[in-house]
Amino acid sequence: MNFILGSVPPEKEEKESLLFLFKQNELLVRKIKEQYNVPTNGSADYSKYLYSNMHYIGNIDKQSCYTAKYIQGQELKDDMEFLTLRQLFGQMDESILQAAFRAIQIVAWDDTHKFCGVCAAPTEKKSNEHAKVCPNCGHIAYPRLSPAVIVAVTKGDKLLLASNKNFTSTMYSVLAGFVEAGESLEECVKREIKEEVSIEVKNIKYFGSQSWPFPNSFMIGFTAEYESGEIKVDENELSDARWFSVKELPNIPGSISISRKLIDWYVQKYKE
Ligand SMILES: [Zn+2]
Image (cartoon, rainbow, N blue to C red; front, top):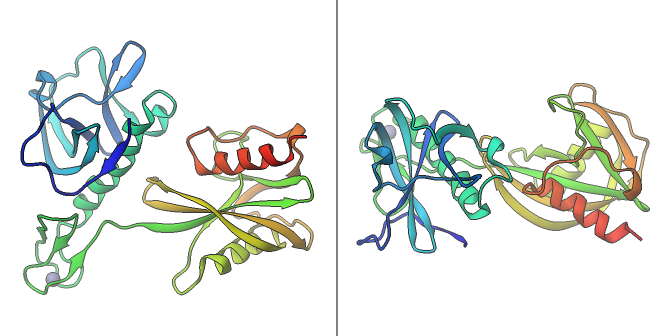
């Protein structure tokens, strides 16, 4: 199963569609046979709920996916509950989770762009794409993406991992940071690494990318090699940063994130 992104719903639905209903950052899900799923729109599941801001977001095997903002409803059925997307990591089909990553960003964008940012007139939804147009001044607002680099830095056979001050547990991950206006991705990689751990890097290579909706990051992954300097941790952001070998890796992020894919890349390369 693959999620295929879209903006315009089909004229005729072939199957009952899936509805990704959000209460703030929590998704309404249903647990069936130990697996979480998203309820279908046509079933009785939703008759008790009031929702708004509905958008088509794409399809999974020709099953249309819609997203909407929960307003109110009666008590949930026993097998239904609201959970955050992070709570659903590893407990849901990856194509459904991928659709949910898009869904939560579209709902949040819709909710925060009711009025024009230029002249404050109420905006109108464009029919053929996810865009809000101002009927007064013509300003158009699209869903916001915040690009961020994420980098696996190696020094010989060791990998640089850091523990963020905001991490709830003692988890270590590769370094990441948001791209500044006017900056190239390569410049951002060098600046972030320099700011956070005070070292210089070289041989910056593109690795892959991932949409990461917490809240609207677009992660662009790179690998890089150590060039010079001694690790000195930026204590405003990090609690620790060190070089780790394959055999002594600490607690690392789960498999869905690009940070984990970068760490897995390192392990594959240096495991011998
Ligand atoms: Zn306007």
